[in-house]
Length: 436
Image 1 (cartoon, rainbow, N blue to C red):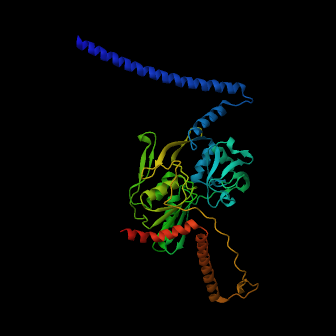
Image 2 (image 1 turned 90 degrees about the vertical axis):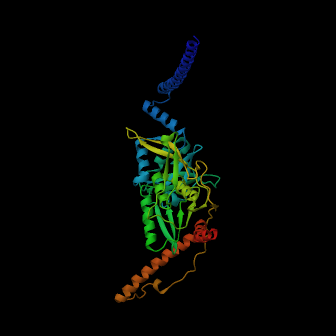
Image 3 (image 1 turned 45 degrees about the vertical axis):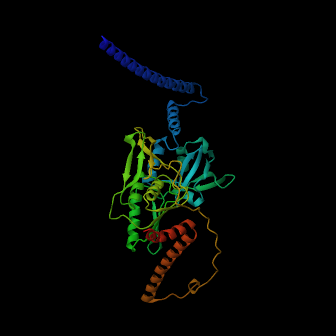
């Protein structure tokens, strides 16, 4: 009898637990239904009573955009045109101003201008606020709408009202749209064996372009040191940042991604390759270094592969997926955060350099004294004959070499961060020897 009573008590407890679970599910379903009913009611009221006629599709698209953009500054629903433009950013040619922007506290903020673009030449800087585009206030637009308005046909003008972070009032800038170059890697030999390698963005061919630049450097002799310049690099493709990091690391973690559950998490590791570069390195960063460039800087610092020099980076530590939808539109959705090898998230924190050195505007130098040489005089006598032609070609080649050396000299003289980075990269081998 006692045994039967115990079983009955256990059965009642189980029944109560299941019933409780059922009640909880019913309450949850009721709350979901109530939210949907409220949404449908408001949608119906807007359709009937709003001051002008609005289609249900417009309202639903707006509701979806609002839902996504309320999550974080990077998630959004893109129209067909916006989705196409987003894909062109990394794979094809497009025309526009050439700046990477984000939304912060309702303001459109310049993350960084892309080098050799109209925006860069016009003087747009990281930290600038875009107040309006062609007279329309950006506070009334979504981020993708601002991007779309700044794009257009080559040769057409766009008028931006810009508030520089060191100015009390905005200025108006008229910028002519042009092709935005997708060449993402530049390189110069600063001194024999010491190379400056600049990555402007992480597009579809960045790793390939970097491999070509390193091959060219090796072709001139031993690579004694590298200054990897990631300043004003707004980021780009995750896989390219991993490949770039892998060229300087032989093993270990590069970056890890963590989503809401284990399915959305993964770790990218370096693999040993013959082409890996072991030369001393200094990485230059600033407030315009974001996303993929922060992955590279974080990996090289945490793995003690390079010194980081410059200013604290932007702090974008989230990963977005581009998801094409059946109607040609696209969803950009934040799916994970990324972490450096030490397990640190740089979201809203950025990467703090090992040596924090602010950028200094170069002092304007006096114009060189006016001088005239024989070759500058009108109708001066040219050398004749084969030897003369050879001498002329040799002189042109020498002049070109001298000009290149002069350009590098000026570049170093006008860039205090680069100048210090070069000193550090030359000193690193000595410091390592002293630590042994």
